[in-house]
Image 1 (cartoon, helix red, strand yellow):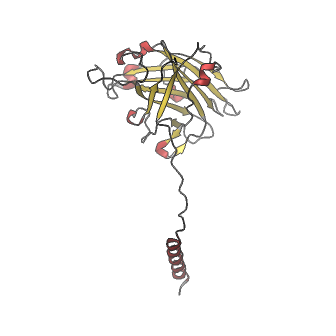
Image 2 (image 1 turned 60 degrees about the vertical axis):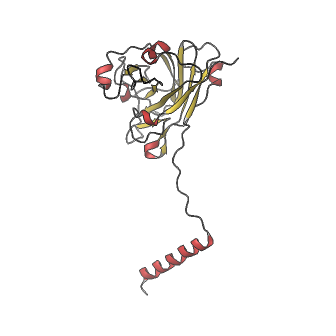
Length: 264
């Protein structure tokens, strides 16, 4: 019997023995998990937008740290810890991001900030069928230089950034802090720690969608991130949503955001 035939014969015998004895198959790597439903809790006190994330309200917020590259079935290469809050006037957001190579060049408001290290928020409010823009959604970005991008999209097919960047002004405020005093932006030769963003969006920004939600209302949303690094072959695109395609605008896969009202 030739060696190759003998090897195949033994493989067959071992496979049959495994079936008879109930031997387990080798474990497969599980796809990254995401939390489908997120609570946006009520801000219990005043929040100062300074990028420090040090108020008690942030401690009470739900932690969102499952940033994944779902279409590649893997976790993000760098960690992100985000939070959302709301009150009568604003929707608040914060994110603490690990980043060993801070990179940012866009300084013009509503510029193409996705070519930098950037934190992104997408919201698709629940709207009734009679709404003038039933396919509307919103996009907000803040890059590592604290440059802001805010867009109202009547629909995905209406023209996108090129049409609406110059037309949109929604009133978002934000602040950015670098993690360590030795961190530098745009020096690829050093090793940075990361950066933090904190911001708020007035409910007037969502006027076309009915403005401020009510306790119990549910929206679709996704938090996303572009992370450029000299250590990566290409920028790392990650999201809290289980996106089945590499497209942050694919709101069919977004998380559910549930607005929790103030405690009695």
